[in-house]
Length: 262
Image 1 (cartoon, one colour):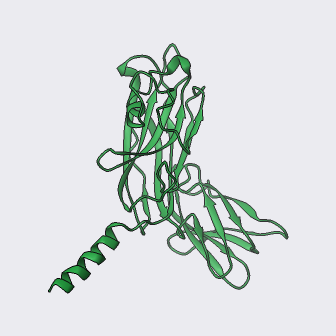
Image 2: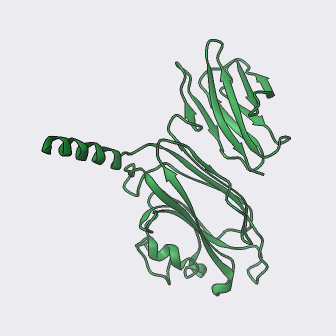
């Protein structure tokens, strides 16, 4: 009996500590807000556990005059609510920059690692966005999107609100959607999901790139010229939904699920 319990415990521990590599993508369009700052706004994006423990910053855009505008992220990342520019705020591996000058489409990604570069355990996580466009609590918003990091894809189109529209989120484990290998083929597709139906497809060798809908009908095809290693697949004429992009090298085909979320 002890042997059985020990074996069960070992299996359980292995499952609980699974660490699947992959890529999370989040895209959305900011809603313009009128204020004395005009089109200026600040933003932070970070990953945290389902219980709110900080994992990693993905982006921080702010300046000296707006150092008090991202209080939630500042505290989460190790700093204080009054200063998001202090060195104690953890920005390891993040994209950082000055105050944003416009309300526009934004794209972020996460490779499944923490601030130390280690792949975190599979499970439920949140990617959180804090956006501030003026002084005061009425001109800021914080919204989290929950997803499951694991061996299966998690593709979502969260509901728009007064601050973010065209929201698309996808966790794709390694080998699914972002990069898939068939024989000696290497294929990468970004962004996925796409807000406008345009995808950049990169490959090591191919003779043809095509796309099909869920019914198996071909909706796009283009031959690859000699020495080309990428194609822009424009599916902007199609409605929102799930499609498949196929890359063929003459002997094998690599098939990838993509999402259009207009």
